[in-house]
Image (cartoon, rainbow, N blue to C red; front, side, top):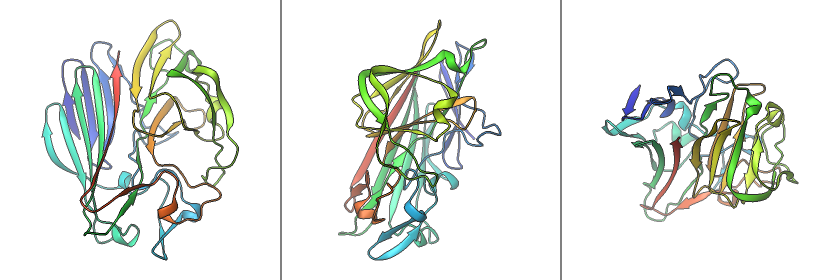
Length: 290
């Protein structure tokens, strides 16, 4: 376990999956992370090199089939710490021989956690380590689970998400096998507020595309805003909780699950990112605790 700390925040991260374990706000005396209880044994898995599921758990590249489980393999792997100080740590994942059997690309994947006053920044950096002419195809995303209710004496339904822009958008349905179905169902109708109810997640995650917003706040009735989540640069957003569980995940994605119409070619996959040899991709989400 690796610890980052300043006067306002204390953050813990595990090397397994480079997974965020704790965000403790000192002045509020509050833990913001879900406790990985029986409803869902994770806290903040990192999604790489895919986000969501593949059709038949299979993609094709240069005519050959490859198989990946939902959200990819990074969350199950031990990362190496390659840089560290009291307020920042960099975890690095490099491919091994076994990985090439399911993902035939040479990459370097860094996850950097850093504190600055009351803000936690999480950066995903992907580098194509392949030879000239070898492209790297990947998706990446976050899956942090925040405890809800977080304030003593409050209920789940006392909380809402407030987006920084007024939205007219729908949630994309998810099939039982984790694929994106047709026909979004309206979830925000000329509004920037989403009241959190456990029933929202009985049919899986709320998947949002083409949002105008780049930030969302967690607000509690009578207590005001608790934090702001900045997902600038992430074209998709997932909001999810396990059935009847006491948490909410706010998930910034550069990538999305296959649709029911996917041809399973990774080069054609919706939301896929492509890097030429030696090129670098970087995205950062920020959590500011009030």
